[in-house]
Image (cartoon, rainbow, N blue to C red; front, side, top):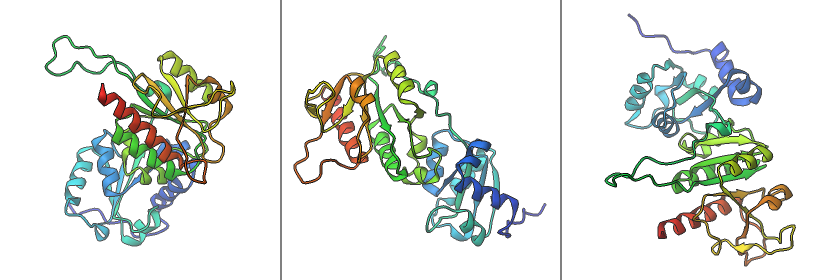
Length: 290
């Protein structure tokens, strides 16, 4: 039996559909699909349990000795394997200098109900152990730039954050550039998307405190704490907003704790991903001390 012939036409219907998935949010929503490009990103997605629908690959662009291993891993998921020529792959790709790997995957479930917050498995070697989790959640309100989303997800993965929630988002969570900038951690960190009101209700239901970041006094006139002085060892959700406007009054009013990051220079705010990283690792540090 002869091997399948690679796609060579730039006007092939499959190529057009893949380009539409790359460029149009409406297409991704209608099909319930999205794209993942890159050797590392697809590898981590598969390790995280993602099962691609289709994998487009271009041997002419392969750069790594482990490419055969990834191809075997994808085949083990029963994904459709489609070889394409370099011009075709470069037409479908969304990153500069593509490495010959592009997967079509099912759009994740971004509902709050999909987030599992509860007790972890019993500690190994500790009889009858039932340690109650102290969830660490990161919530970003109205963040727009895909690069900031990706950077926050990378830090969430590194810091062992339980979930990332996007509230009233401007950016589309299925934007391929979010996956790219997260270097695949998009699939290793549980992600949800919801309104401010629904998210607050979910936090209250799970008894998770709201820690809002702001450089300004709250609506009650009380100054925020230095973030290193706040108790971040409890079940908490760290709230960050846009660099220009910060968090909305909704969250500043509902916050259980308001914290600030000392600013000693001329600017009055940090990049949102940097701010979130500082708070995450302060929480990690405090929890490790316990």
